[in-house]
Image 1 (cartoon, each protein chain N blue to C red):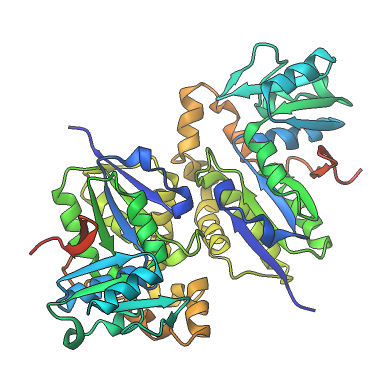
Image 2: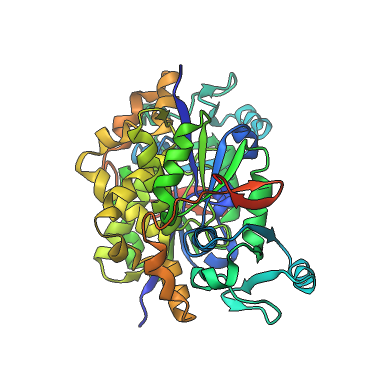
Amino acid sequence: MGKRKLETCFSPALYEPGLHEGSIVVIIDVLRATSAICTAFANGAESIIPVAGIAEAKEYKNQGYLVAAERDGFVLDFADFGNSPFNFTRERIEGKTIVYSTTNGTGIIKMASSASAIAVGSFLNLTALANWIITCENDVVLFCAGWKNRFNLEDTLCAGAVAERLMESFLYTTICDSTHAALDLWSLAKRDLREYIDKVAQRTRLRDKGLDDCIDFCLTTDFTEKIPVIKNGILVNNIV
Amino acid sequence: MGKRKLETCFSPALYEPGLHEGSIVVIIDVLRATSAICTAFANGAESIIPVAGIAEAKEYKNQGYLVAAERDGFVLDFADFGNSPFNFTRERIEGKTIVYSTTNGTGIIKMASSASAIAVGSFLNLTALANWIITCENDVVLFCAGWKNRFNLEDTLCAGAVAERLMESFLYTTICDSTHAALDLWSLAKRDLREYIDKVAQRTRLRDKGLDDCIDFCLTTDFTEKIPVIKNGILVNNIV
């Protein structure tokens, strides 16, 4: 049997849906969306409904849902809280369905809709995610969400960490330059990830808004074994 | 006086023209376009007219110009030769104007048209290029041509090599994750560039077509001091 293909995409602007039909697509947005989603499931969330527009999020709020919504780091006035992982505490969300407003994220989920599965990855669920991917027989795309379509280092490093686990299984092969780059950058950064991440642009952006308190947490490996996946447009935990 | 900004763009799909008005844009397409262009000027070419379409290239041929034109590595039947740097020998091109057919390249030149200068970079003119950039006072964008809009390692490494020279001058600053990635990948690859480049996808593509004979040459540092720049849509040597 041939090896499974492993690819990495550094930005939504570089994603080619036609190439990835039948693959597992792993969405990575370390600072902070996918870290927040993994935290929510770790703390007992039942499901998360990703919505694109503010109007849609507001409508859900009026129906009584818990709503996490912010734009450029600022919590929207009608929302219950913003998108920091620290908002998704067990007390607030256990057993609940949360509406999560994310323009970027819903666009990515739509783009990846021809995939055989769409999972959410972060450092927080690294080992569980890699082990689950290995149990599947599909090709894999590590899809970095980036920031406003730009390449970013933190998502690339997380993709590199996942790619390392997959390549170590000897079940995957890659001829993708982005995957090689992610693996090599991860090999440099992993010795001291916190120090390395000091230079990334998103660190500065979050610091400027006083939103950088969660960065150390987002770089924590294996906080949870939950693997959020999209089923019928809604995020649920893959292994119940 | 503030430091000059240094940015890197990994693909035409990621280029944001509005951000780079007044910057120097360095186009990098190591395998093989910008290496071929640097070689042409090293061997005495007077100027190079970049054209997008085959019809346009053919028209120039009918007017008596030397035409370099290929698609996916195959020389077009009416052309004098293809796009390998080895085609641009002194005997053939000294003192001449060459028409160079490149769909990707002309698109990039158009995108970068709001820049204060557009230069052509490769390993072949690394030191001369970096020294010239430093004599200017502009911000700089290292624009990797990529392959079919994808990220590629060879252009990224060359961007990293240029960025290293610029950062060593202490005149530049960067908050661009792509530049940090390029610098870090270059720091890994430069110990043995030929060995590192063995894994890049374009190496395999060129080998499959028997076009990989020029790769070692394209990785040669400082073969020439020529700096091709765009003036009125035509490539000329910057320092005559």
